[in-house]
Length: 498
Length: 95
Image 1 (cartoon, rainbow over the protein chains, first blue to last red):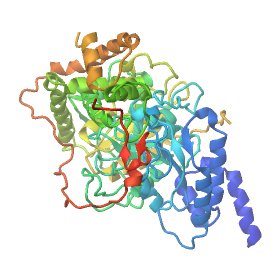
Image 2: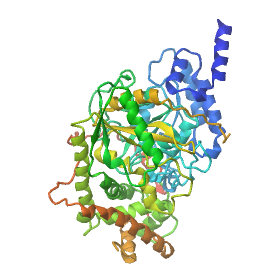
Image 3: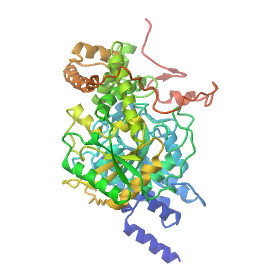
Image 4: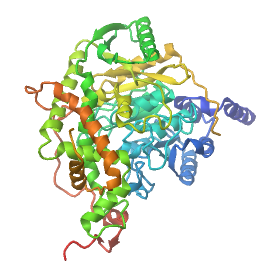
């Protein structure tokens, strides 16, 4: 028996943990074919060899090893993530582990508390590997605004992984973590998932607690899972979601078993195709990808219905009023007094504030704080902020109307595949346009998932997005599950960074 | 031109971000292009539309005004760049 077990263990090593999903890893650990410590060592090794990708800001390997050893000593454990090492975006506050939000202003910030969402993961048995790089305060679409440097896409050197959860997407695609979590304010989970050939879900606003997450735009921010397949995504969403009385916008309802209830049959389901998402200059490859997705859905028995979301083109301008306005208010707390960086310059309190924030914030954060302050300032509030909140109502209304006719909406996730590092840094607007298909969902508070659906001529992955009514995550997970099987997306990386 | 350099200076002051004259030029250019972009919204007539106030169908929860986690003074002061016993230290405010 002992030899047999040893033999099986050897087989697992050869089978390479890099190529299997979180759900498969959980099966191995439950059947004791691998220990939590072996898993931890595997991912720690991968992380140590992946410095070129720059996906981690902080690691806590001593603690990871200690926690995995103590997990292995437990006799019975029935949590969803038994002894699974996981890295998380550095926007989630982790107790006694540095949390930077990718900013110099929080370079040395060590929270004395744990975010609800990460705490939910630990309660299910997960173990922290480290904190993942991201755009500064999650403001960016390429992970180039991080104070800790840009992250590299594991698919090809010199390409961005998307953002703001770029470190999360890279670490996942490169198998430096078996699954991860990110945050999505305007596409920050779905766009990097699309750029790295992974699955990313932005839940309904209020499904996952925002407590203990560094705030960017409070009416848009949501945490969500990033995984290698749809099954893993259902599992992670189940683990991280749930009501939290510490978040006043948290939805109080029974927790769902997304993983157990996952099913592939989507016969008779009605899918809307919004004509407004056929934007000018959309690459042929994206159009083809979308068409293929529609064909797959038809083949699986879904009914395709043309719909209209007439205010789609106003979503991005609305977002770039609402998000900066909320950011300028949220970031007012960084004053160099209670926590974070403080400048040595300045002769009085006000000057100290001004230098602290000038030295502590990067250019993109400054741009957004200034825009936000401007649109909220006396004399301009009605013209910008109030106007944007009215248009936001219209955008939400478009979705409400559509969901009277369809169960879900299918769109491309992004207007292009991953672009080169530095290609869009000089023009904020061209960078913002990356989020053209993802932003409307945040404005309406809806859930949406991006799944890898094909590749472009460079061999870079492209994603498709499914959107549903609020709180119908199970529906889009099921549709994605059915599509995933038909698409059969494969990605093998040669691990050039090692 | 939705915003000029003097207005950018004023907004920087309101935002408590000191701004170098060397950066003013490029930053103003960026802000002008962002504001021009968002001004597309003016093409829409929204006179009859009520603004969105909440994205979810619930009223905010209320709670009793009681201490939940007290006695954490040390934790609160822990990350302060400058402190003295039980106080945050700030530059002199009164002459």
